[in-house]
Length: 379
Image 1 (cartoon, one colour):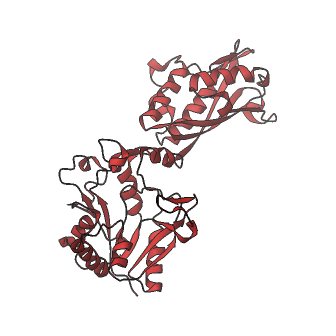
Image 2 (image 1 turned 135 degrees about the horizontal axis):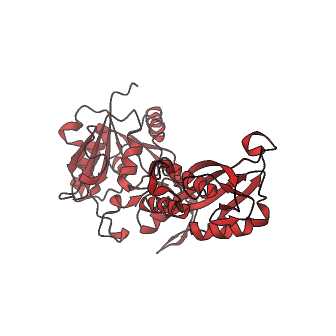
Image 3 (image 1 turned 180 degrees about the vertical axis):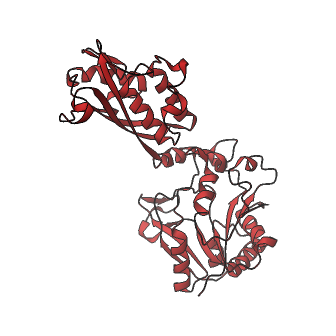
């Protein structure tokens, strides 16, 4: 069967009392975006989606601040007093005319993959059912207030997105509303009305945000990685600064700032993980105000940047490459200094040293370089 068009619907008119905040859970922050922004962005990756209707509550004062607000693929409409009424409003809207299939997805379920959409459609058509949904087995013990322990293998958890026949779902929702039946999801409405539904295996990471702790769980899935590199020439002197600690030697660094090559490398890795470029953008060596700049101020700037997007350092790994000075005698001092500057324990800082095997400018003992990698995570 050839698929002509697919309509997507996100019911987002709920308040979410169990979430425990004045702001509805779909507008809570996750990965520097709102929950619903994450959901919409992932959904619109699918080329199968022709139109998206987002159903919001009347007087919603947050929707205009969302990054998709002016997207022409999206239609915003007011919802009803229940999920069934909200989705039914979407199916009866003038922009919903002419669709063969409808996909309904929870606004507060942002950690899904758009690739599941084609799998659901394929399952729906092969099974010749009226709807298809993802499910996962129950891992924990299951108990009933009245019956005690229940045999969990007879049950499973239903997720979204759910893909349905447009005509069959519309008919089913109207029947449920007429009968005053509570509709937890679209597959229930179809089954209540006598239509067949099928299912495929879902993903445990496709979590629906219900409580505030769910955001913390989802944030563990979000990490960013950045790399940094810096190199500086030597000149005669009485020591070089690495990670805020002055290592005594017969060299000093030729640099516009204080020349802390280790902190510069780490700063670049942090900015890279944040997609903000490099330290030269913010601390140009052409700016006289940066002459002799303490590199700890550069790190402070970078930490403030990642804090503003709700992230923090998870771990750092750096490799110092030089012939002289020897790093290992001062490794503990450098680690202690880095821990204080970065605000993370030493156990999350990898620090290694190697030589250039007498090759190039570093091998000739005329320069030093550092390569760093950082992992950021949500706070």
